[in-house]
Image 1 (cartoon, rainbow, N blue to C red):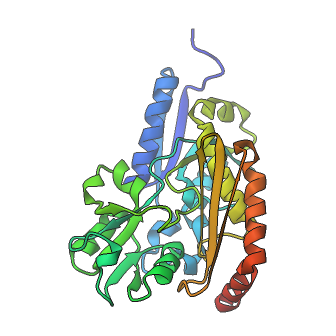
Image 2 (image 1 turned 180 degrees about the horizontal axis):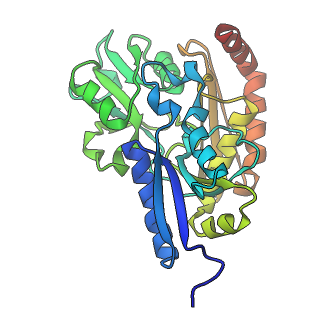
Image 3 (image 1 turned 120 degrees about the vertical axis):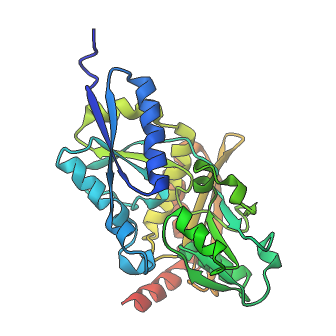
Length: 315
């Protein structure tokens, strides 16, 4: 007999980029194995963030541009859950929504991609490097001030095409996205987290649903990866305390080593001329508290001044 607590249908909302569809299909396959009696389908949508490709996210409203339409589809009952890259999810979810599960993390590192050069160190002065994030731009500016950083928007394939057309000497992408799309061969080298501290949540998938859908939250539990969640929640707590968004050049990365959670973070000016960084080590269960503490340490080191200058610039 069918289990009455398992719905006959589960609809997954997703953006329609190739990578987002891969992620949604990945979750669909996992759910199909868990709940073979349910019909699992995908509702593809184009978000405002996908439509505006000629301006950096930091100037048009940030991460929420990739999630708002998906959340609306759940409010209207057209979808039950939404699958996102964790790094695209705003630090504060809208009222009425919850992260039902955080999946196991893929490679969290940034990837250096070039057709001519094997590393950032090889790039001649004035070389154009493409990136979509202020976080990467600030770290490049701090370590390689002789390089020219230019905005790079679009899906993964579009960004690679622009590189192949010679618009950039190199581009920086998330290694996880390239690997998930079967494009690992395009990675020239993975950048160490010491050289390029990842974005908060990079490499992990989040499953969002309405907070009052307790039955759906329960169904997603088997997809929740505790160690990844502890790391990502620590990173997000740090970013939230700092007011993290696309407008703030910051990085946060946590990993569990020998049963200890190590959390690192930084805040910088967009050009990397000012940067403060710090790290904490503690119990994985205390990740959220560590995130807040690390953010406060960064503020005491001068992050407040950097953030205030950013606010003044953006006004």
